Length: 268
Image 1 (cartoon, rainbow, N blue to C red):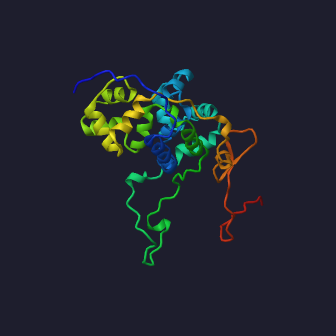
Image 2 (image 1 turned 90 degrees about the vertical axis):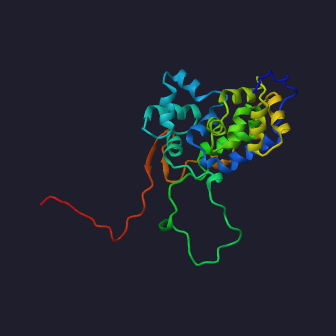
């Protein structure tokens, strides 16, 4: 495989190309299956998790471990929540709740209603406590991508389309060099075989992928369009937040059952 310098980028992206539109739709439909680290990366952009970590004096692996929920890291979560401008409880909800199964990994849904009398309930396999896309950070990420897709790098657009596969793992599966693939998407190197294979994986013509690579990134979207939906600023159900506090005061407790055993211990 020979490497050549790419031709200079012509024009600027507007967010209307097939790949950009597909990326926006992918995020809108599948945000609940994105790992917390990818959601946070979209919200930090153009800053990266690694860049934010260095500014806070912590190592990037520590931040990724915190976003993966391996340890509480209470102080680190608090600092990251302040950077994302949300209460710490909202970030904790994103991290601690299991993501939904990605669309690409779900079995096909049959058309029409099922004919059997069998009903779907938690006792028959449905797992409770999975993300549903209503977390404020998820909704902000959807809004951010829709607004700024023209300004996102080509590699990030492709990464969103490949989800749940990462670009690096796709390269390994195809026996391709990840360094050459990233250079191709950055427009600094030509690799015809990699370009053809990637376009085939994305389901578009090579010309569409080449257009995304050659065009320069456009400006961010107009912030005057308006804020995200009102629900994007509401805390998740079950969290009671004190005014001006980033931590939940308490969880909403269910009503006491009349059958609940009560023990009254008094002094004799």
